[in-house]
Length: 124
Picture 1: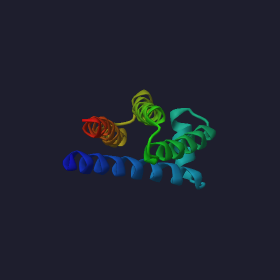
Picture 2: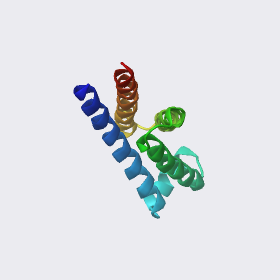
Picture 3: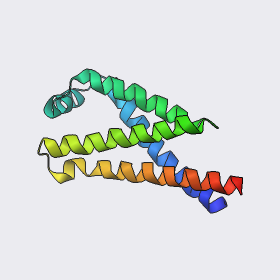
Picture 4: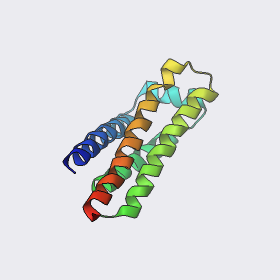
């Protein structure tokens, strides 16, 4: 159980660090963020909405209990990252520009899988 717990926390901390960094930098006026949103065809306000949702998702994942809310947070992070990959693909950006987002998906799936393994180990 100790290995499962450590692996869960490694993936979860990496996921939270990624999402928190993304959310916090989006709240600061950033010409690069504005240019990126214009490039992919979304209004800049969407970035603010996603930032608030990321912070709420982080809180949901870190709070003990609330399993259904955690499921929604993991789903939201997955949709956010898949949307980022799609935005990169649809605008014709080179793979090197959007491929790091795939690492975020690894963090989401790793945290999610080990969250359920940890839950099962606690029930046994």
